[in-house]
Amino acid sequence: MLADWYGGWIRPVSARPTAEVSFSEYRYEDNTSPKLFDIVDITLLSADPRHHQIENHVIDAACWVKTGELPWDALEQLRDRPASLWINSSHTNAGHFDCISHAEAATVHDSLLLIRPDNFVVEVGRNHWTGRKSYRGKFQYNGTHYNLSVTDPVVRDAFAAKEEADYPLNDVYLCVSLTEPYEHDDRCHKLVAAIISKQPL
Image (cartoon, rainbow, N blue to C red; front, side):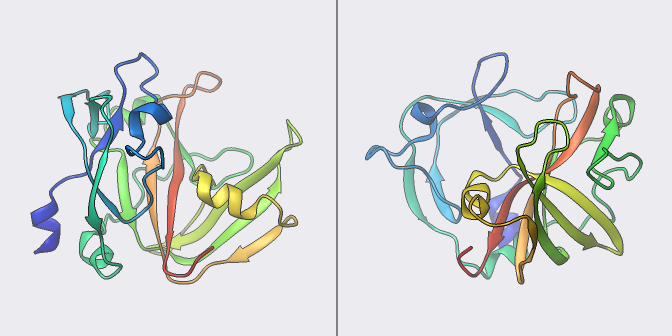
């Protein structure tokens, strides 16, 4: 099976306390950025699990090397099939089943999922508190409705000039991530980290 050959999920992180990876640490030698479907050779220095984020691995700052491209059909073999997106218990004002408590997160043993949703919609709106544009993903998964914040920078750029409205997308996969606790509410939030679409956005 293809999924067995590729193994488990990895989240590249830096050695800094905040763990974010800068462009200088994830660029190719020609100063371009990796794209979805790129197969990349990365040097991993050590595992760095943080609570439920067991997939974290500290990377070497050397340039990444593209070695190929993953075919679209491989996603169906690689996708996860959980009964639900972790624990369905809490909501933010804008979302639906988009966060869990710190205590609930302590019972979770992973933080990355690749899923195939039903009836996926990008919701372009306006943040009630900041007035800035917001980007959310609304969808069904195993009969449960979710509304999660979209952090995928490619998607946010693609929809930045669009009016506030709902934009359905067909035939997509989602990489969903569970964050560490946010400082302002001490809850772990479910995010759409990437929208993988067969058609260009």
